[in-house]
Image 1: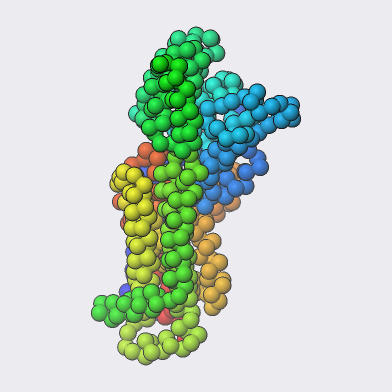
Image 2 (image 1 turned 180 degrees about the vertical axis):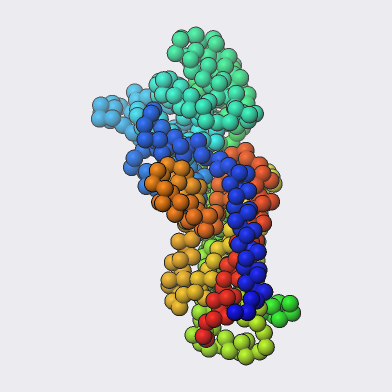
Length: 257
Length: 254
């Protein structure tokens, strides 16, 4: 049998594939290995993908190599869930003006409800993409201040503290939020406010946190500081807050005159 | 070399005149535009959604174009007998395979380049600050497409049916992204024959996770940690499939 150049090349290429494969085995680190080990853990603390209903969808996303996109879809789902009415039967019977009023959306039924699944939905996002920093901040602040469930906020933050790389420049924000929530739990109001003040100065903080702080100031009759914060919110140009911020500015300007 | 380039150029022209090519190209542009609408739903994270959705859409449609053209080009020529026009000339058959492959790759990469330019423009208009990560994502996706095109060419020579070639190529694409999990499974297996069988499968199937940079954007890993070796791996993998296709095509009666 005549050996052709193609056969020689085939052997050379096959050897190169084998060699580079072994080298790559040592060099390549799958960035989500830790999250995957958590998801596939059959025992231990509840670290699996938390919403069984979407398990197939999420696993498909991971397997097809579109993990970030799947996390984005899950994030949109969080916003849709938290941005729409989630009324328990007893709340539905109450007049609208007496229902819980939150800081994230201001439509007729937006933000009304208990949102008991919010923690699970946020966990779903960060277990798909543990590097999605914003979700830790947004989710924990919503649970701690809007829904008055600080323990749930803390558990989400704890997951961030464990899984988010501590070498990142924005890692410390997780600790800042954690402290603020702990002070809230301990009723140490002044400490909580000072930590929230630091938090809202940071780039990439959710606008919702600024709104939370502005509402706290308004509630404690620190109208000037509340007004300054609502001005900041208005200037972000965030469509969800613009109208409500304008209303607040109008009201606070009247009060401070 | 001249003859390979001639086949390559002919394939490129043939592909860019194909209606399917245009339909997929236009559809991708629409998808990238749709991602702009989707990004509105992302609250304060619109850029992330626009970026990811666009990158995935471009890669997905490039995959469709690559697989479709790779699988149909040779099969159709054999069926319509137009392949004789080339093969009656005194050129080795592997010239034909290589020419076809480079032509297909050139046409797919051209469409990808245009789609990425459109996507990049949209991101920049939205106020996004470009970084090297985008370039890395483009490079790694292009390598992925190059590998899968070589695999699809191989299956189109190996199989007589277009449908089965399509299915095999898509299977390799999925399995290639599943490689990390396959490796993870081998670590858990205790039954040695099964463990080694799966391990062999892990090394035989191209590991496309090496080139999945668009999924590692915010993870903080360094592109240069493994990518230079991964480029060698990709070129060698393409080489293997080109050689296998050439050997098979040599033996094939057309």
